[in-house]
Length: 256
Image (cartoon, rainbow, N blue to C red):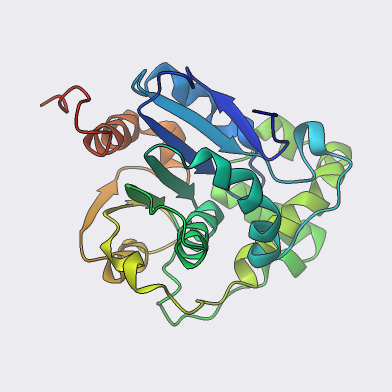
């Protein structure tokens, strides 16, 4: 199959029992989840979404709307749904993963075995949304520092940060422009894992509200801030167990 610029693949695709599609957070890219290969089950093929404006796609136009992004992404993803799959998204990536699941069902595609969402306020929560994408540079930089997901050496280099600002602002706009769309009735039947950081600026209960959209939702609060996925080893164990539990039935049992 011809490689897609939208998806960076990792793992043995020929023998994988399940494909895990991972959607990046604001400022993230396909490389943000590359280290997961060390601990994911060898039965899982990891496919990381690579939006325009980063990596090998640096020269491509940025996208500020999730619907527009999915219109381009889903034709690349559909041919890969010939085996069981799971969707994951962190922060703004949670909105992308959720929206992708809904759009795929509307297209008549096979449903994901499960979905995992972390560190994002549910769109069902009625709270004012800060327009971070429109903040002046100094306040925008302060916001990035508070999230603690950008390396300090980059934050302390004004010239480098000016290069990253357009892509970062476009990513924040993705979330700020998002509105809950009409939902396919089968969406609620997808098993879900909802993860929140106990020290995150986003309130745990607002993240857990995602679970109200699913009939079968596990919720877990994890020690750490917005990027607990990078600092809490328990995250890897939690997600790996969830992924293994939704592999094809013939896969090895979930470790106790």
